[in-house]
Structures are given as C-alpha cells and as structure tokens.
Image 1 (cartoon, rainbow, N blue to C red):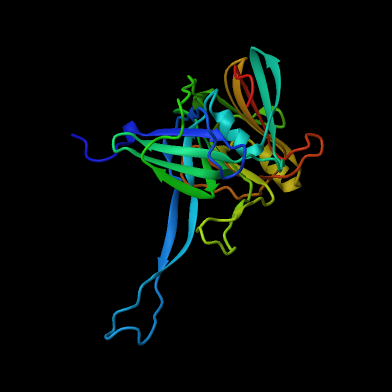
Image 2: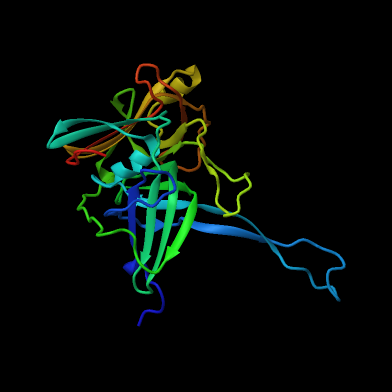
Length: 316
C-alpha cells in the first residue's frame, strides 16, 4: 500500500485575494499542474561563540527570515492559463460573447495577489500560501507533445492546518494546447523550419525581507522593471534573419498555438532585437542556427509583450 502523501491524491486550489496576504472565504478553484514547488523555507545558521560551554561544542543556532517561493509547471490550456496570466500581467481587455478574446499587456502595476492551497487528503494535511505574486514565465517551443509553462512565484506566508479552507472547490473542464499546433512568425511572416526555442518574461519582483518583524514574514513584494527575451532555433535556410541582426533592425516575434478560430493562445513581442550569433558547422548534415532576442516597449502597441487568449471564459 502507499506510504505517506501521494502526488496522485494531491489537489491545488487557488483564489484571488481581495486583501493581500489574507485568505479569502468562498469556493476556490481547482488548478491543474504538473508540479507545484512553492513552500516556506527558513534558514538555520550557527555562530562560533567562544567560551559558551564546558567543551568545544557550539551554542544553539539561530533562525533567519521565512521565505515563501517556488515554481509551478502548468499546462497551457484554454481555461486555467488565463488565471496565471491574470497574476502575471494584470486584468485583460475582454471582448466578445460566447466566444471571448482576452488581451493582456505587459507593464501594469495593478498585479493581483493570489492565495494557494496544497491539499494532501491521504494524510489530512493542508498548506496555504498567501500574498503570492507571479514573477516569471518560461514557455518552451517544440514540435511535439503537450504545451506547458513554468511560472515562478513569490509569497508572503505559509499557514498549515488539518482541514481545507477552500470551501467547495470549483472544478472546471479544459482543453490543453498541443505543441504541434504552434506557429512562429517574424514580422507577420511564418518562419520556416523552426525546431525549438524559449520565451521568457519577468516582472523582476523581489521579496521585501529586510524589515524587522516579530512574525518572520516578509513585508511585501516589490515590482521591478519587466523584462522579456527568448531564443529561436531553426534550420539554416536563409541569411535574412542574420541580416536583421547585423542591421540592428527591430522585428516583431510571435508564437501562437491554435486549436480552431475560437480557441488559441498567442504571445507577441512587437518590438524585439535579434542578437548576432555565429553559426557553427558541426557535421555533414543540415545546419542549425540560434536567434536570441530581447524585447522592449513598443509605442504603437503600448506594451513589450501582448498575450491573446481566445476561449469561452467570460472574464478573468
């Protein structure tokens, strides 16, 4: 029989906080994930205090601040991923009826805090994480498998209990995006023979942990300057992309996943700069090239990154 808590029995619940660092009442939503690594850590250190004991043994150690952080690896899906984007980028602009289009833009300072609950029903253990913020996003580009992303999270405190505080959890069906449904465009033209890549975004957040408090909590989470970058790997078919890097010409980079006209997910960097990279010849077969890029604010789009999700969810 199983020994201890099992990942197959684990449940992750989440809800947006009305007040930062305060667990909301009501029914929380059940969130799909592959891994959820958020946890509370507290450093334990020891000084070399001389003449403290009758022998050479050390005195008691001391504790540092509690840090709450970690990463969640989640599927890119038609429903729940919008909630992660809400944390990462703020509220979207939504249009449509029945079939909705949600558009998020980088740069917002109105980023909500979220409460998470890890439930381990097989051992009667519950851990809540309050005041959580979405700091980073990493999306891998590939030609096979289900699409997923890794979200880096920062929180303010951990609460442990024997019973759930998530009410009656809301379980919502979803459809996952598949990587073979992906398409990469450069300046609105499909880029041929792309074999892989990565999209990276960061809110450059930092826990405010240098204040004096008696409860071991951090004071809050500071927002830094957002950053976006990535890289694309493709077969060396043309010198056109290299010429853009050499000329230092800004380009629009787009990665989209499409199920049909009403279900899609698009990441757009309207103003990005390609890094000039040498191309190695490493064998007799087809050669590859890597195109790293860094995005910046685009005045026309009023954003550095624009994410569009089409689905049947009315609001986030």
